[in-house]
Image (tube, rainbow over all chains, first blue to last red; front, side, top):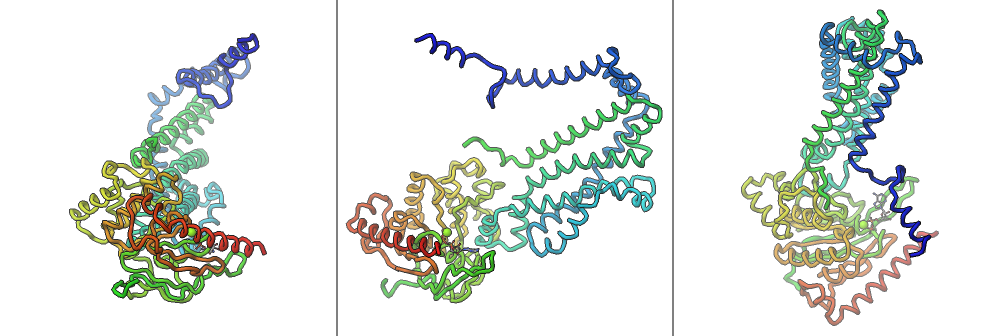
Length: 277
Length: 271
Ligand SMILES: Nc1ncnc2c1ncn2[C@@H]1O[C@H](COP(=O)(O)OP(=O)(O)O)[C@@H](O)[C@H]1O
Ligand SMILES: [Mg+2]
C-alpha cells in the first residue's frame, strides 16, 4: 500500500462533524437537541447579570419559572388555561362538524363544489380578526364572540383543504366499487370517506395550530379571562415574567395537542404502517 | 366457432369520441364490432392509444358509447354493474380493509349473508394463493399480490364477465408470467368469461382463446381471430403454449401488425 493510498484511507475512515445527509447516532441526536436549549437558556440567564438587557423587560428564565409557579399556585391560572382550552375545543369541534362534511361533499360532487366553493373561497380571503368589532357588538363580551372568531378563522380553510384531499381520492377506487355493484351512497360511505379520512385528520391537526393563533388574538383584544387575558393583565402591571410564562404555556399546550393528534392518527389508521415489504 | 357456442358479449358498431381541452374532437373508437363467447378468454390487443381501454370501459358501463350497442346476454349495457367486474392496471386495493375484507367487499354490498360471504372469500383467497395473507393489509403486499386481491375480490362477487385492463402491466417480468399462469388456472376452475386488454403480444398469445386486434386512429377492429395453433386448448404452463407448432408464426404475424399499426399511429400523430 503506497503512502498516498493509506492517507486516503485514513481520511475516509475519519469521522467528521459535517457529512452531507449521513445519519448520526441516537445519543448524538439527543445531545445536540438538548444543547441548543441549554445554550438558549444559558445566554438568556446570563443576559441580565451581564447587563445586556434590563431585567424589567427581559426577566431571566429562573424568574419566569417562579412566576409560572406562582401563577398556578396563587393566581388561579389553571382557570384561565382551562377556559382557553375549552374555547379551542368547542370552536374546533364546531368548525370540523361543518367543514368536514362540506369539504367531502364539495370534493365528491362537482355540483356541490360549483354551488359552495365561490362562497367558501370569498370567506377565506376575509381576515377573521376583522370581524372582531362586529362580533363584539353581536355577541357581547362572553364566550360567544371568541368561539365565533375561532370558528370563522378555521372553517373555510378546513373545508377547502378537505375538498382538495377528497378530489385526490383515486377515480379507479370509485370505479372499482361501481363495477362491484356499489351505489352512490355506498361509495361515499365505504370508499370516499375511509380513503380521505387519514388526510382529514392531518388537515385537522394543521388547522388546530391556526386555531391557537386566533385564540390568543381574541383573548388579547377582548377578554377578561383565558391565557391571553392574563398576559394583558400582566402587561398593565409590567409583569414581564408572567407574560413570558403565558407564552411558554401556549407553546406547551400547542405541542401537547399536536402530539395528541399524532397518537390518535396512529391508533385510527394502523393499516397505514408499512412493514417494509 | 361452432353453432352450439353462445354469444356472451356483443359489441356492435360502437363509436366513441372525446372532446379535448382545445375543443377539438378525437375519435377514440369507431365502428367497432366483435363478440365474445361464453367461457371465452378474449384479449383486446393493439398499439397504445388505439382505444382498447375505451372499449373495455364501455363494456364495464363506465363510459357511454356515442353510437352502437353493447349487450351482455342479450341485454343492453347501460351503467356500471356487478355483472361486469373490472380489474385495473393501477392497484385498487382498499388500503383500510384487510385482504379478506377486500374480497368480501362486493359481496357485502350485495347482501350476501355473513357466513356464506366469509366462506366464499376464503375460497377465492385460496384460489389466488393468498391464504397466508388473509389478515394482512394491502400496504404489506407486493404489487402482484395486490392484483391477486383485486382479482379475487372481483370473482368472489360472481360477475357474468371479468374485465381486465392491462392488469399485469405494472409487474416485473417474472411476476407477470406467474400471474398469467395463475389466470389460466383460475379461469379453468371458475369457468368465467374474460375480456382483457393488453399490448403484450406474448401475453395475448398465451392467454387468449380469442384475439381482437385493434388498429389506431380511429380505433377499430383490424383483425379478429381465434389462434389456430392452440386448437382451442389452454395450457397451465406457459412453455407448453410457446413451444407449440405455429406459435412463432402467430407471434411474427402479430408483431408485424403491431409495427404497421404503431408506425401508422406515429406518422398520423406527427401531422
Ligand atoms: N377521457 C378521455 N378524454 C380525452 N381523450 C381520451 C380519453 N380517454 C381516451 N382518450 C383518447 O382516446 C384514444 C384511445 O385511448 P385508450 O382507449 O386509452 O387507448 P389504449 O387503451 O388502447 O391505449 C387516445 O388517443 C386517448 O388519448
Ligand atoms: Mg389503455
